[in-house]
Every structure is written in structure tokens, then in C-alpha cells.
Image 1: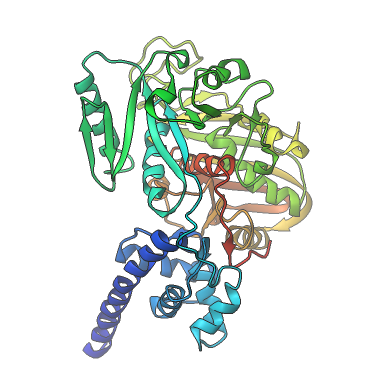
Image 2: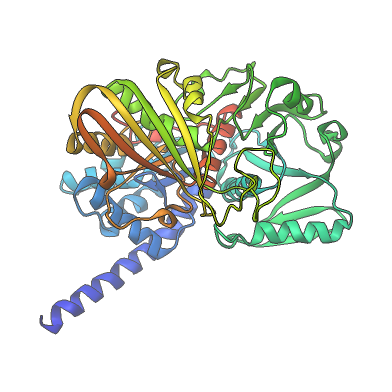
Length: 487
């Protein structure tokens, strides 16, 4: 190969880097000034590095079978910044592919047609509405990830404001605050916090990227008067899992300053178990206690939903291969649960899961059709659900995968279902994935009415993003999504 082509490829890479660098401030301005969240086939472009933006453009080829470059999308982002757009989530990737298929041309005219609902609709004096106070009750794995996501989203008119966390007292308050700040700042699985965190021991606050978060020490909900901290009409997100029914979670509602309670675990009794994207429309204004179900339920229900819609599910079995959790022991020791007393980092531990039965709470049409089991494995994060299904009509691998691929990019389940088609991916490749579940196309098996699907999920981060979506729903934080999906 001659030197010239190599130089050409290298120069093209640098040219694309330069274009991506120009996109970043435009994306930031749209986010902060217009409350326009730009994405690329569901992947956020805001607050991303140059390399991440370029990699996300490469991803489009796997989905659409066509190349998409920053040279295709930059004219659209630039034109968007000039159109006085109103609030919305805009998929620049889909617009870029459509614009390219048209042969390019006048980007402004194209966007005036595609984004007609929000063009010239930004009113800088109108504001973005009233922010909603959020309190995290418990600050463990899920609590800290929720804090990260809430802080990340605070700058673009998201209207959800993390005002406080509630934890049990640990003696030396100053030392306790430093330790909690350190756990938020550094994470062995998800990496360092993207920003700065400072501690004010006297005020008992953590300040993360300008967000002042009160740390409230209490041993029970009954001890807290949130109005004493300037918090009112708040949503309390209970991350402890101690209380799962209306009576237990109702303790939060008895506190001054609390409007609603959201549980980050499966709810019991009459508590609604919500999988965002599936049954979030079942939430009414009268619902004051809601469950976000489990990470596994969130991972499998969207895939089961689209499969049942298209093929029908006669019956099936769900096997969960789940990373170990804090509930297990590091070394062999007493545990009230069967088998869970054995060392989590050294063993695969067969245990039960309620996810299969819980599916019926979000998808009643699948009630009684699924069984389930779980194996805890020696990994700290990212799990897999294996769906072994008997369908009501026949299909094959290509047709099944093509359908799931389309559902991942052109349906209302775009945020819930992701799709990967690589023979080399492993669990750590999905750390930080914001979807509820990721279909592994290379592992799909289909023969007539029998199908086996492998669905990865970040049981911490992906689930937390689903929780945030429910928070937005119950706080009336809803965004128009453009261009309109086909499904």
C-alpha cells in the first residue's frame, strides 16, 4: 500500500476530530439554553468527548448499514443552534441518515420540516417550569448512581433537583461525610465521578458540580421533617429495600415535605410495579407510592413485550445470570437465605428470582406463562437474562434479530432495548449502558416456534436510568421526542 492512502486516512481522522470539537459547544448550548437534548440513535451527545462522539457515529453503520460521519451531522447541529428550538429530545443520528438519503442540501429547510413542532418555539422568559425536589433515602449502590445521573442532568432544565440524601448516623459526622463523598467520587465499577465534589461538615452538605445536597442523618423516616431543610412536595426514592409495601413506604408520606415515594425494588401487595416504557402510563395522579420493580424485570419485560406483540409467547423460562450483590457474603458466613452464605467472589450460587412472576405485574397477558431461576456469579456488575421461549408462530434467527434490531432504533422502546451484533462482546463492555437490556444478536437461537435470546443488562446503571425515567414521569418532566418513531 502506498503512503498516500495512509496519510489520507490519518488526515480524515484529524479532520473529523476537528469537526467533533466544533460540535461540542453547539450541543452544550442547545442543552443549556434551549433544553434540547441531542442524541445519536439514542446515545446522548451532551457532555461527551470527541472520541466518544466519533465512536457513536461509527455505531450507526451497525444499525443502519450505512456510514454516518460528523461531516453529515455537523451541518444539522449548526442549523439547530440557529432555529430558536423549543425543548425536546432530538435524535441527530436519525436526522443525519434521512438528510443524507435525500442527498443533503439546505439543512435549515430540512430541519424546519422535520422539527416543525419546536422551531421558533423557545421562549427564554418563560422558564422551564418548577423544579421537583428529590430525596434519596439510602445511599448505597443504586443511591449513588442515581445521584450521579441526577447531577449530570441538572444543567439542562431536567427539573429534577437532588436536594438531600438520608442515611443512618455513623458517629463522627465530618468523617462520615468525607467517606460518603469519597464513595460518590470514586467507584470501582463505574469509574470516577465526572466533576467535583466538596464537603461542608458544619452545614452537613455535599456540593457536586454546584448542586448543594443536604445529608440528613436519621434511623427511620419518622425522624425527618423535610420542610426544615427547605424541601417541599418532594419525591423520596427509597433505596434501602427495607420497606416494600404500602404500610412501610407510607412512613415516607407521613413526613412533612413529601409528596410521593418511589421504591427501587419490587413492590409487594397493591404497590404498582412500573417498568418504564411498558406500563408507565398506568401511573395516575393519585398514585403516591410506586415501585420501579427489579433490574431483571426491567431488562426482560421490554424484550418480552415486543416478542409477544409480534410472535406471541406460549410459555417460557427465564434464567438470570446475575452479578453478586451486597446481600451476599464475601467469605462463607451465616446468611438467612439459602446458599447465599457462601463466598460470593468464589462461587456460582443458585438462588431464586421473582422476576419471571413479576413480569405479569407489568404485562398481565404473560401471567402464568413464565418460570424463572437465578445464578449469582463472581462478577461485581452486569448480568444476563436467558429467555428460553416457545412462540405461537414460527420464525428464524435472521427474521427475529432483524425485528429486534428495528425495535431498538425505531420504536417507543428505544431507551429500553439496545442491540449488539458482535462475536467478541463480554460483560464489562456493557458497564454504564443506559438501556434496560441489550439483545446479543450473535447468541440468538431460533428454530420454528422455539427461540432462545440472551439479554445483557447493567443491573446497576441501566436500572438506575429506568428509575430516573419514572421520576421524570411522576414529576411531569416529559419531552417531545423527534423525529417521531415509526413504532
